[in-house]
Image 1: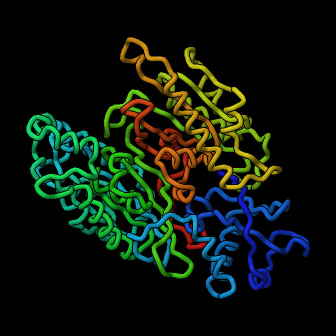
Image 2 (image 1 turned 30 degrees about the vertical axis):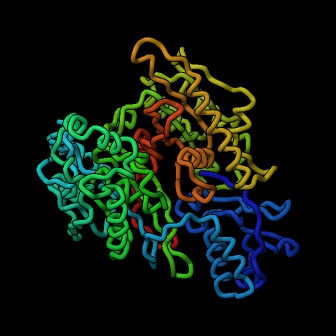
Image 3 (image 1 turned 180 degrees about the horizontal axis):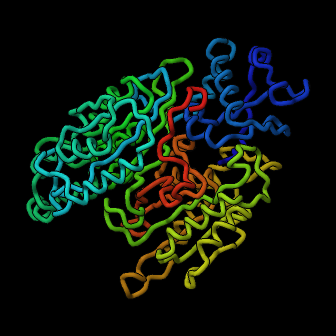
Length: 530
């Protein structure tokens, strides 16, 4: 759970009188000028509202829990929309929300779970599949689909959309099991159309097409073949898919498709263009979850939060998919605390992990037990240090850096000393640059195993979200587009070394926590509790 300290924006008097803010928050009459953050991405509520906020007006710190904040924000936007004198308020509230114009308006909140098909026969032999329909699931692929079925067993899906290709249809059938609700084949969910590349072994593609194949590998957004730009076409198709998916009835929707098309679905939902192809990995049977929240006006595209990316049946550090990387950054969120589990804000700056947080810290350490960690960086809070200590126990070669600069960059500032989102954003950007530099400073050795460079960063979920956004080259508006849980792991690969582009292998991976994890999908809740 995150506690954010935000810049203030006044709410009009009509809202104060309507909702009795002072009495709700236990404030005296002289504190009835409530403030909400100007730079807060309101519609990204599944990500932000699940972490909670501390709202600040001047020196006054307002402690607001999840439900109260939802009421306050909803009322603020409604007030802004209904009152002409407050039009600037609405405009300011909307300025930091990333554009997702490809998405249709929705009336109710929706959660969409994306799953890539299991390993296919052509995956196994290194053949380029594209949208061809000759490959079927291997026994391993069937097993991966079964694992995904168990992972998603508790979710009450309202419907399932799937690609009509055999490998995907079979995966969807396994996951859907004996559910009675409808399954719908959607042709636009087929894999990327690769034209003359389809059916070739990868080495054949290199030999026959040379520079064109290199373009496909290095600059896929501008890759052209047979008069087509496959990645650009795929992005347009993904936008079409969202029209069908989000306009369907129900609030919990399963989508089973392919590597490239699932990348395009995640990217178009979160406002990323085709240049992000291959930066958001999708492994066989990897699960990604997106939350969509309607705008208060009912017009325009919904707000979007990526709850997790590529949660795989196997641990993320050995999962297939993407180019092999010997250089990587692991972002570990500290274990749970009493304030995070009780949704109590603000957190005590001296607060340590609770029993659940201790278990989560131990589970993270188990996951990383056989990983060759070179450097562990962490912030100064006791809960963060506790999780970092668990990771470093039993490892003799890594260096735990506790230099003052890391404590400055990786801390999460609590009351007193309220920090604006812009300050957090700038600080996280500096932290990301320093982490990447530290990764580049890890000395290489002769053996292949020793050539692996791994830097672990333990900090607060909010700091990690900001660093991921900096890794992807996004703006502060992206802060509300991602969500991380306590005890989670996110992996950033650098297949071209620390000076190259960061590739997100997974975000908010929690399978290692077992029954102590936040479920991949939420049970059906009343709308006010979603």
